[in-house]
Length: 347
Image (tube, rainbow, N blue to C red; front, side, top):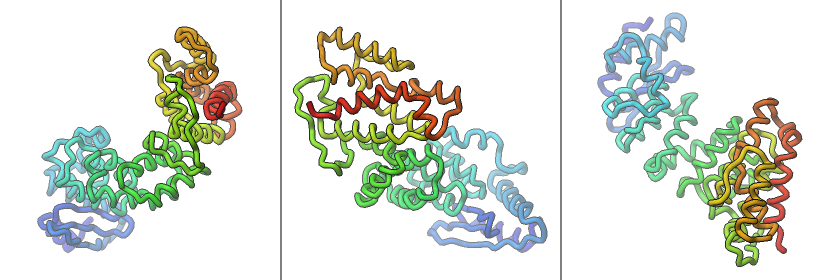
């Protein structure tokens, strides 16, 4: 139950603020006024603090959305589907519910007008990093001043991120435009030599603009089929992918690396296949159709057929993790690595 004093102060907050968030750990409710000043209410629970927070949320929802039942269930379903109408956005940022903030962050109707309010509402919540990633998937956010605030937070948060997919996604997003400094990018690249999830973010985002820290040079070749391979950036891309594959111990790193590899070396006559032997046969057949006899071209055609299809079935069937991935999939990884080695070796 809320005390009469807390109820009065919350009603004042509702009438004077454009956004409201609840710190469930410190038991405070914070409002942001139109002129960007914060107003804080420290709650005084007479009993169970969880019930006090629930009472606060119920009051906010009933006053702002006119619903007595709490956060509308249909919005919870739509939170990550981008289906929240523009007319609801500002109201949802005043009900002190983090799912509502996620809904606004992922809304197709998100715009400059509410962007800074969304990020303010996300601050100091358990979902701040998730909301930040949602926001940075929008081009206009990456170009906005708030985008740099989000990037700074996510960069600081990276050491505390254990989920591999989140590591890849965050790195990918941080590499957009000028969100972070070149020094920060260099540091991420260096860290990626040990924690390869960072490198996956690089090869996904920075094709054609990867760091050249090893004085990599282009290979001499006038063969059309090898142009994308023999350029300086092509060599860095393939060397980086080879480095990642040598250290594979996580399924999502492998899936996304193979997707990048197949896409980068894609060829109009090559299909993505789910069997490495079929990929090898396809490479031989296409090479013959082209009227060529070149081991490097055959290697490129083999890699053009790569995708997560080559490994996902085996990993799922055997619940593979860690070094067991490399051991069980050696029949797939070894031909791919041999092809990469051939393509990065001068003749």
